Amino acid sequence: MNQHQLVRAALAGLLAVGLSATAFAQAPKGQEQCFGIAKAGKNDCANAKAGHSCAGQSKVDNNPNDFKFVKTGTCEKMGGMMKPAKM
View 1 (tube, one colour):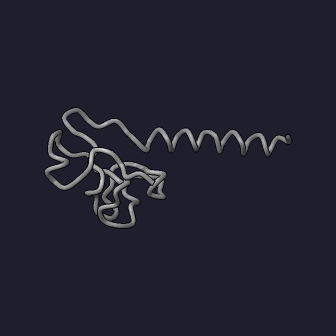
View 2 (cartoon, rainbow, N blue to C red):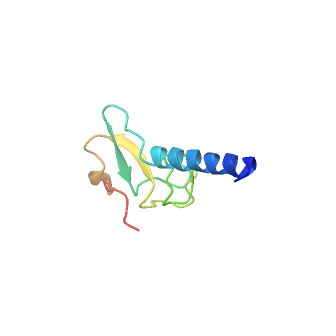
């Protein structure tokens, strides 16, 4: 393996770890993740299942794999889900 391949492999590994860690960011105190209620461009975190790597990059309204943080206990009342959709 040459040096360029080694660097690329290391960077790919770091990116994969970073994406998986941000996909389920910890909710701020008094809030919970609510899936399926975020409007396009208004999601709170990255999500590999939804096809993007940053908050605010959702392409469609109410994607069941994107979430917004909401006040604890209000998600299901708003029509959201506590877990992402299974793919």
